[in-house]
Image (cartoon, rainbow, N blue to C red; front, side, top):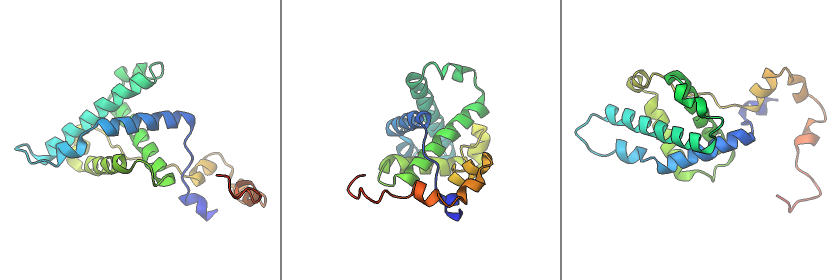
Length: 169
């Protein structure tokens, strides 16, 4: 039961589509190049501009990848867009925890951006926070009132490895 607090929830199909959009946006984004270069502009302005560029890129890719679902994004206010991207970034963080070998360069860019976005100046300028706690199995089960399931004696059999098929992945 205690381990469930540290096990991320698997991604749904919809979340996997959003993850593809996030990865594509991070690949195209030049966040670290824009923020870490010497310039006459103050670094906080470069951070805000780079985050806004990332949001624009992500919004465009989201609309292209899911046109029917994303029609309403044009009418969203700053907080709603911030919430949408907070969900995207949480999906990326959760995916990386479950798949450490994936998203090597993109994850670093995402972490730098999220760290920079947590500064007071960036939060005030952007009007939102991009941080959400990572969805864990324990919170999923508790939310649905199914914590008794975690104490069921058959659970280790249901979630354990298959014994007869060692070579299968």
